[in-house]
Amino acid sequence: MIGARGSAIPETRTMLDILFLALTVGFFAAAVAYVHACDRL
Image (tube, rainbow, N blue to C red; front, side, top):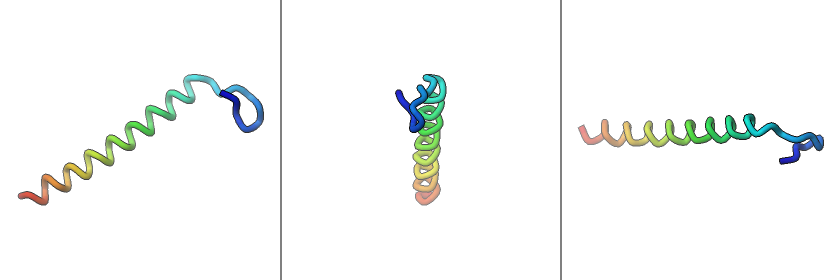
């Protein structure tokens, strides 16, 4: 993968970006599920 300045982006950086995006989406989904569960009480 080529960056904006023409340098190659290391694979570990890309994998960490994907990991943190997945964790963010997972946390948001868990928060929404928690709100729905509390709303039913």
